[in-house]
Length: 465
Image (tube, rainbow, N blue to C red; front, side):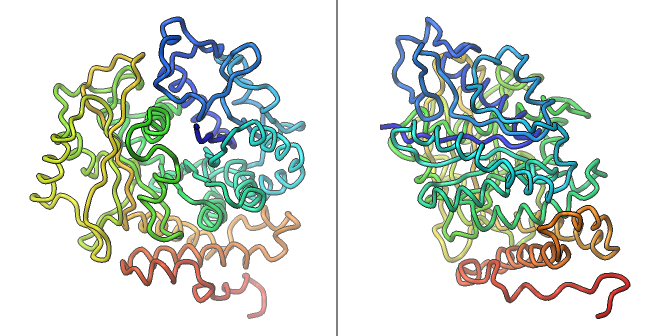
C-alpha cells in the first residue's frame, strides 16, 4: 500500500519550485500536462504514482498538492500554463486583496491566522482522501514574507493537528553573500528557522548562492534565471523521492529515509549533492562522457557539487550519509566503490556513530531516456551546516545592532515585544550552531535550543536598561 505525501507550496519560491517538480514527475510517470496517462505508459505498473498523485473520477491524475500564496502573480502564471488543468482548482489559494506579505514574516504569519479555516479544510480534504497518509512536504523560501511567515504558521498547525505524521521541508535559504532585495531577510530567516527546528522532522537545505554557483559551473550561466535554478532543485527533489516512487529493497517510505539520516531530533538539517545533471531535465547541462558508480559517488563528496554554501574546517564531519543511485548500478560495483572511498578516506565521520555511507539503488523512469548510465543524489547530515546558521545570525546581528527596520514588525499585534521575540529565536539558532560545532552526541542530543542560550536582548536605542 502506498504511503501518500501531501505537498504544500507556500509563496512565490515554493510555487515556482513546485511547478517544476510536478512537470518532472509527470514526465517520469508518463502523465500528460492535462493529467492523462500517455498511451506508452498504460502497460507499466512498476511505479507508485499514488504516493504523489490520485485519480479523479474521469481517471485524470491530480497532484496531492496545495498551492498557497498571498499574491496571485505566480499562481496566475501556473493557471495560464500548459499544466493549468493538472492541479485541483479547489486546492489553490490566493489572498483576496492580492497584496502579498510585503516581505514581512509577521504579515505572512498573521495572514495564516486569518485564513486558517480555509487552508486547513483543503489539507483535511486531501488527508481524508488518502488511504495511508505518511506525511507532508513543504516547499518554501525563508527569506520573504509568505514562504517564511505563512509557512511557519502552517508548520505549527500541522504539528498540532497531525502530530503523528512526518513533515519534511525543502527550504531555500537566501544568498547571504550578495546584497538582497529583501532587506529584512535576516529577521524573516531567524523566525522561520525557529519553526523549522521545532516542528519539522527533516529539512532539506538549499541556498541561492550554491544554486547560482552550480548554474555557472554546470550550465555556463553567470546570471541564471529563477526558472533555471528551479530546474536544479526539482531534479534533486525527484531523485530524493525516487525510492518512494520506484520501490526497491530499502528506503521505500519517508520514515526510513528520515530514520537513516537523523540520529537526534534537532540535528535534522540535511545537505544535498547531485551529479550529473542531464540535459533532459536541466537546460544547458554539461554532459559527462562516462559515468560509473565510483565516479558518481566520488563526485557527490566534492564540495563544489553541494547545493549548500558551507565552509568546512578540519573538524567538520559527516553525521550520516545516504546515496541514492539511479540507473545501471550493480551491487558489486557499489561495494567496491565504498571500499575505495574508505581506503582513500574521502569522507570523515563523527567518532560516536557508524562511519559508513548508506546506499539505496533505485530504478530510472522507463519513459525518460537519459545520456548517463548512472546518476546519484547524496543526502547528508553534516556538521558544516552550522556555518549557514552562523552567517544568518551574523546578518541578524548587524541589523539588530542598529535596531534597523523593526518598526515594520512592531505594527503587528503578535510582536508587542518584537525585539525579545526575534532575539530569543536568534539565541536558539545560536544554540543549534554550538551543538553542531560541539560534535559530541550528548551535546547534539541535549544542548540544541535549550533556554540557557536565550539570554535577554540588549535594550532598544533610547530606552532605559
